[in-house]
Length: 141
Image (cartoon, rainbow, N blue to C red; front, side, top):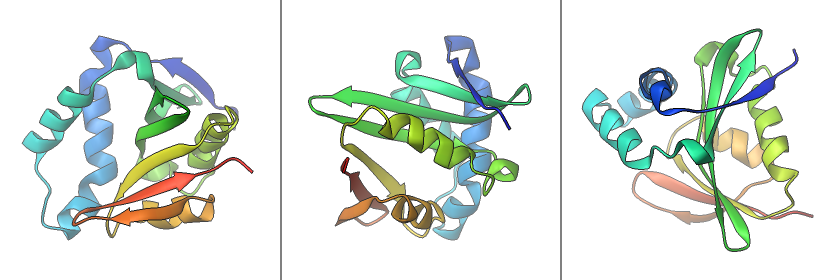
């Protein structure tokens, strides 16, 4: 596997929405909060192509992620993997690319999502628990 990064453009919105729904559906259904309309509205409100990238493996977009640079840290807003790409190291590869910038990283993960185990395995520490999300922070060693 040789992943490559590709920029996001406005025309990618529908494909990214589809990937987001595919990645989050199971977790949101478990919480009784799945809604395609809400997923569309949330992505529209957070759609910033200049902060977004796709991860391409064998010519297919399998991941998209959004990183906002803030004062002295990075905020990982999205890291969505196609279900068939999960458990294959691509999420870890993306985190390694973000961590290589040497700045602290913050993010929120949906409560009861398998993503929580993923982030904990990769050194993220819980800083706050909310009704539906868990806030994490990673500090460079």
